[in-house]
Image (cartoon, rainbow, N blue to C red; front, side, top):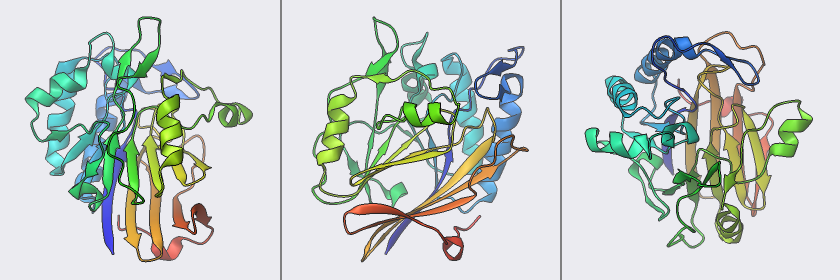
Length: 284
């Protein structure tokens, strides 16, 4: 059995001093972004996570100097960092994450060619690069995944959701941000993949899960907005399939309750949620 333990940070929106508070579904603590970031770094340093996953919108205004500063502070946790850019990381700068990569050589930014990752227990991992569109919004910066791993598990790291969850969020009276343009071919390709697939993303500022065939999509709770959380994610490959534990850990009092622990199992060609996952609780 191979296992990977990750600490996941989504939507931290690091800002310059003096940035006013904002609002999405709940209050955005933009003036407190660095305090929240340091709380997250301290949590990661004290956890059993083997690597840190950043799901985009690390910064609020794509400022490379702030991104480098944030990554250097995160280095205090002593974990490898894997990241993808969010829409707030690519405008107005072309790609602040790419600029930061030059200053932080230990940072890994996966692309559209899946490859085995030690941080993910040897599972094949691909990242979804984005860019600003001349027509407005953001689009996939590429075409499709290359060299899919046959019937083996695949993990896709993205800022944007790949499965469309707008209707589900709307039913919950929650706002939905923009969609990623050009993602249709990638979605169809993931549906054709013969093995289990897991998409990990941010952007919508909500804890959410969606399933479609062999694909499981997990939306991670944000840091800048309630529940101000870090997510602990454990992926296990076992003889009977792939298992994913997700534990959401609020760092501040949350205005909306979030499921503390979920255990997802891929068996017999589909994903199911274990209603009694407490016995498999990941290490803090």
